[in-house]
Length: 424
Image (cartoon, rainbow, N blue to C red; front, side):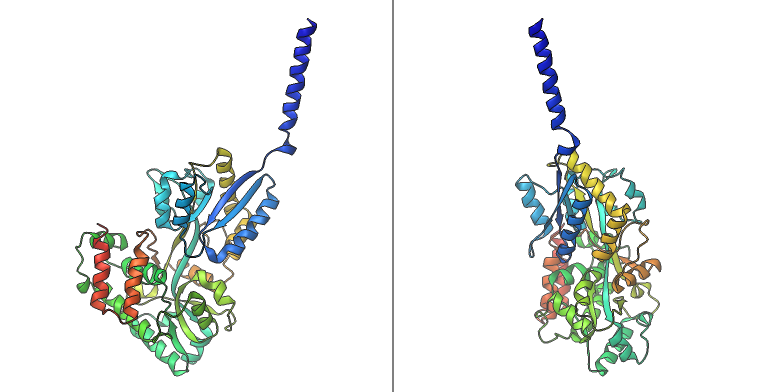
């Protein structure tokens, strides 16, 4: 009997020790990692993680930014190869579609009902929704209002540019003041992913139909009115480019500097470049967007629209993460949408236009405000964000050859045709 009593007492002591070892004060911290593909907000992301970790002592959020020159797709593939995928990954829409089978179902999250129309189209998997729309961005011709005011002899009205001819007139007016009209940045991603795809988005029947027709070789490029109009607009940019004589020489930073310092009046780029423009700003923060007109019809609505869409999605990995990590990752996404600190980070620290209707914060920067105005007016073109991963590199290289004078317009269109034929 005494022996049995000793055994019972020993068991009670063991249970007490075990209970102490799992007390709230000694709980393990859950580590979640975030693969960031927006290198321009690396510092902001890291500062946000510090603040988030301080406010959430049971969690450690770690930011991993994809290295310059390496796509987030390549980085994530290598992480999966080593069995250590990021808990959360920020990806371009086209890249995100390659990982839908590895993503957590987010269909029941409360922010889904707050998402803007069509904001989740790129991350649907059968009947499920597996991605979080992180950033709405837009692009077109960014203008320096101080330069344009001087050029037109008064307050510049963006709605006055509604055809290729009116854009040409504006460029001539800028030249008359001794300023170069435009900066055409030569990066392949800007030319292939942004400049070219405007011509896809405005095709009769829409961009998706045009891409399918191109893959089936049912489009004769030389007779396509939109493509021919796009080439003429490209020619206008090429001939008025500040770097006309050395078109491959400039970087994104060079474009931002030229625009901010008033050395050019226009720059074809997106709102993601605001921080770099701001650091060179001599126009008192007065900037906005002009559409890229593709024809001379002043009544054509496409000439009054800029390109806007969700450009980054966040996926939560379902294959190498624990249920606790997935839970904390979902809480982080909720924080971005519903917590004031998260909203502040999303809108004002990253200069992001949120994809959620409940976020009332207005963008602090002028480019974000300009995009919001186009959205409110219903003057937006779809952002072609789900094209093949090699599209911008290959077609961008063809456009680079064209602006360097190495090929003519017929060969440029032919190379674009050949690219799509190979995608069949």
